[in-house]
Image (tube, rainbow, N blue to C red):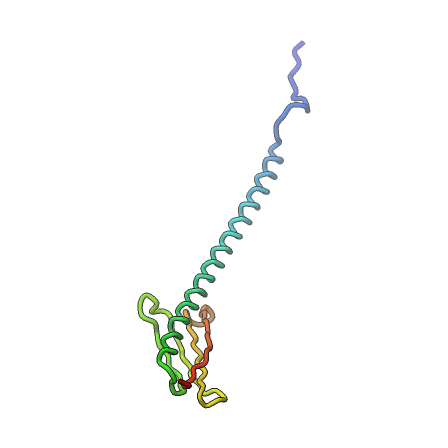
Length: 128
């Protein structure tokens, strides 16, 4: 008497449904990690841009302060290559004390809603 051999429940292995569920969970985890990595890359790019704006603002502000006690007014311009896409705006205004000028420097990169800017303010005196 030959009977067909049936697998017993004690034999190892996974059903197709279990494998599909495991692959789905793995895919969701991988996609989540990729999204987090993409967000991290965007944050690093934005931080690098902010640091570049701050460096350019410090450099330009040092040039302005080195010129001494300037008359009130507004000047604008662009940086030299390789920072040709960066613009600066210098605003010199009188302070409440006549021997002091307020200097506000703003450096901007980009246009419209994508523009990023960084401002610095300092004071210059004509007291020797």
